[in-house]
Length: 162
Image (tube, rainbow, N blue to C red; front, side, top):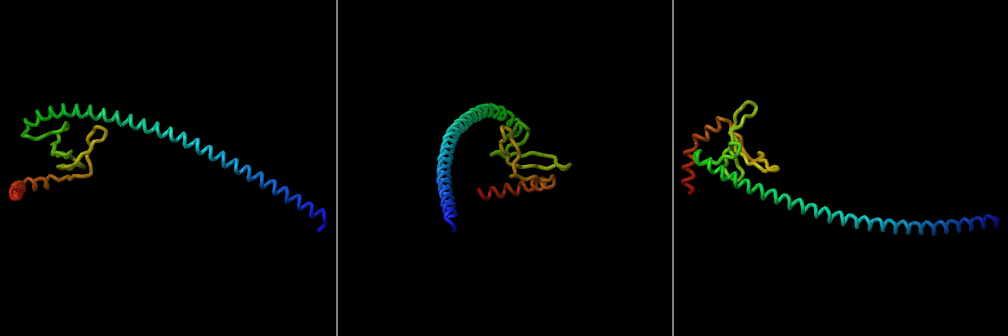
């Protein structure tokens, strides 16, 4: 190797060292910038979270107010229902003519695919509207007749248990 080759190699080494230093400086700057962005984003998300929580609390308060109003109107409706139940042999009926069995359980007669069924089912509240749930049974008319015939037997069993 000639002396010019050696000096070329040394010059190349110096350039690479300078470049590494510049790269590490720019990497550090990038890290600092990235850290600042992250902190800024966290600060924004904290304020967003606070705003979201305030909105949720406000919404809950509005829903409670609605539920209270519904309860008040429900108690008025119950007063009307109580008047009508005495007329019909001590049975409670909801506003759609179904027999109330308690705990959101209702007895109804329905038609499905041309067949008539006696439906005993739990209902749930969906935005102020009562909708049928999964828990329940639909009896054919024949099955209902068997239950009617078994009425005395059930009464005797209940009396023996009490």
